[in-house]
Length: 307
Image 1: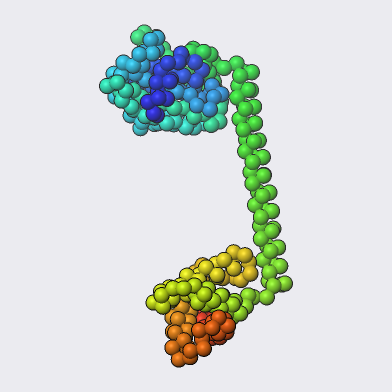
Image 2: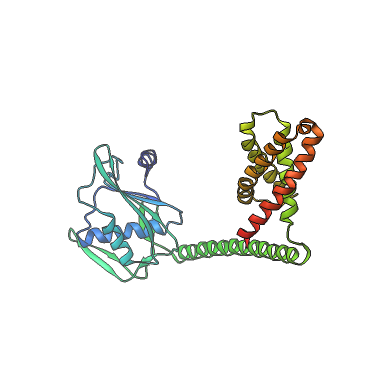
């Protein structure tokens, strides 16, 4: 628990969801009986969270520190060994102003909570008794036995919580069934109505666009292969996003790596041997030719890996 939350609790008075204890000796039966009574009454308080802080004067709310060592294991063993239904606890031993405090957060899950059997202990000539069939609740800062009406209220709250969980599960189940139905329908539609995408034409088309993009931009010849690859990836991903082609990023990258050196080498070879390639129309024609050729090769290579 953070310090601000602890200080906020220390400023409050004891209530149905907050209790302070100056000391608690869990090595004695009386200390165990006191702990059980406090935990049971807090768990039955109909609040989502309740707190028992040990090491704080219950009148002044002044931290005095633990006089007896307390561990989470001790508390969990006592509570889980004696209470039913099980009570969820969070136990922290925390230092505050050079004093150790034990902070127990009680999370009631299924009230009413009772002891599994009768438990009694002697203390200073008196007796602390816990009855198996009695339900302990808090009224302000005092602990009392619940009335039949209070027990009914606890049971009704538990039932309402279960009903709400059932409703949420029903909604979730309905949504999942709707999604599954749509997926099955889409898959069936694709299998019956759609033909597999033509990877050959897609690769040629994307290849031609990438070459046109690279040749129309004034760059140094040494950078042209990099521009081929960038253009190929751009057009492959862009056209796939627009659902004009079926390229994915991985396939675009693999095919682009194969396509780039072929296109670069072929383009450079043609430009070195024929001078007419300086015209724009020749650029377009060569882009179509090299893109077509590179598309055939890369499609053939990619198809071998996809089998």
